[in-house]
Every structure is written in structure tokens, then in C-alpha cells.
Image 1 (tube, rainbow, N blue to C red):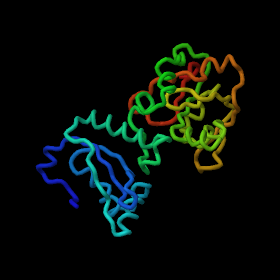
Image 2: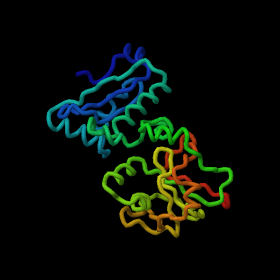
Image 3: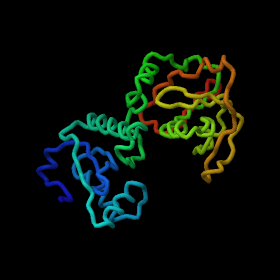
Length: 251
């Protein structure tokens, strides 16, 4: 198996989307995009560095078993923008709870535009496009939106209360800790799934140096009508933190 592309191939292939396959299971364990020899760089990182993550551990386990990672190019000769779209679609597909048995994806970062364009049930699509938005321009409360991503589906499957899944453990800067918060909104796929009161931040009991909030489920129907099941504001480009503060009384 080759370990790098020839100069001519690099000149012709452009941007591409690739898969890394575990030969022991024939399952995809990583989805990526890039150009040049990007597809082979993960192997070199696993061999030449002590960096640790699930992807690199899988590669090292494969090598220790006397086997080689399988490489596939899904699409090539793409623009960078198209490569992002295809990579995002594949990550969404194979990390979605109903289909995750088809792969063992180790990607840390979710697909780009996952919440606005990513895979959804037909009910979620209807809610996304026809549900009412939170009126950010006329807010009466200080809000903290917390995006749970895959933690939300895990909580549902394991019958974990959404408050428990949402309250910890979060990395906060000094200024963020001072921002006033009236309500915390649990966000998943661009829609508010639960609303909690906020009392205070305390040290996390799970991860040192992080924080959890103390609060409780909101029961007031008036408050719930403002936020529950409503669409959240579109994320600003480049915003990757799961926390978003909206503070009409604090600048």
C-alpha cells in the first residue's frame, strides 16, 4: 500500500474527502478532508508523536496487530467548500444515533453546519423550518444557550434527566463567570429542548478546573412559551464553543 501520493497525483487531485478504515472490523473510524498527502498524515502522527486521542490510538492498535490502515478517497478534485460539505454530511450520517453502528467514528469536531443543515428526522426538519425563533432582538431575560450535541441523544437513550446532562462540566473564562444569567437553554440541533433556572456556578465534581451550574427545570408556562421548542439563533461563523450568552442587560 502506498504511503504518499506522487507529485502528479497531488497536482491533479485537488481537495478531497477521505475515510480511514479499521481492517479488523472494516468500519470507518475517521472522516476527513484535505489536499496533498493529508490522508496519510494521521499515520505519521501516530508513529512519530506521543499525541493521544481515539483516532491515533486506533491507528497504533492496528499497527501493533501487524495490519495497515485502509484508505479510501470518497470524492476528489473538489473545491474546498464542497469538500467541507461532503465531509460534514458523512460525519453527521455516521455519528447519528440511528446509524452509528455502521461505523466507529473518532472525529472530535462535528460536521460543519451540522445544526442548520445536518441529518434530522422529518419531525426535526419540520420544527427547524417552521418552528418559531427566539426573539433575540427583544429579549427580556439574560440567557445561556448550551449545545449538548451527542450528549443529548445519549441522555435520552439512557433516561438521564436533561438538567443532569446540561449542568456540567463547562470551561468558563473570568468574564463569562460574571455574566448575568436568568435561564439556561438546552439546545440540540438548533432547537431548545429544555429550559432551566440559573442560581450560580460551582466547581465541577467531574472535571477539575471546570464548572457546573446550579438550577432546576422551569415549570412556568409563560417562560416556556418564550423558549421551549423554539429555534435558536444561527451560530456565527467560527463559533465552536457549546456555550452562547445573550445578555440584553449586560454589554
